[in-house]
Length: 285
Image (cartoon, rainbow, N blue to C red; front, side, top):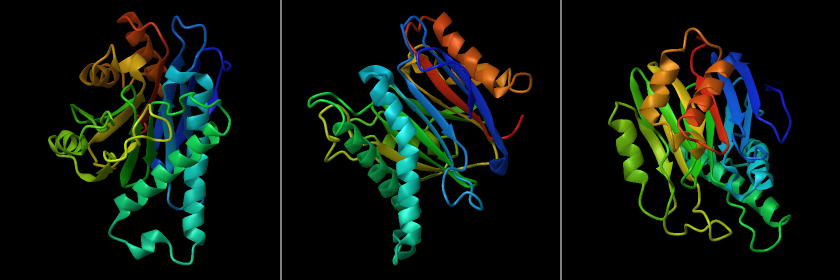
């Protein structure tokens, strides 16, 4: 990932995931805030399974609880996920071999374990009582499916297929949300492979956020792009409006420009804080 700026300034970045025939653009604008507190990371082919199996990592986190917490989460989570995959491959009896028909369950456990590892790291470093459960949305992109994880109410993932904008992550609160996730995706012809938003034990280490919801979604040929963003975007720009905005510029602007202009749209519509997002184009337009 290439980037410009520093930890306290706005950031733009882009990249190409050649194995997956896709590209991405990043925008993180501080707005009227004195600094950029949100976190955003893109890491193509981040595990031992890439290649031959391409797995690309994208994550956005809300700086509501401060920059250190948000940025630590997105920068360390892919490391924890990769370690989990490596441990599975080295195990005498990997879980994915014991239950080959439960791929979504395997990913769910792997991602939840990674969140626990990263939160434990933060708990060991911050004073007692300081919240560490940063709102975040994460996407693992493979050739055939997406693994999406979200925590909190501010970050969201929206996929655009043909002319439809589908919110594929729910606000993972103590209320049931699994059925809504499935209805959102299936209502437009998508296929939910599996999801998890743990409702019984919704406290993750500190009483601020529930455990992440984990959702596995089959990729479809008609999928055009995916947006991961914080509330700085979604509080002012609807999913449909964001999709239309990108669609009209898809063939004339680079991924970086697309991300930057979408973030600037949110600011023109009244967003005062950080606006942080990743646009993942499933074809190199």
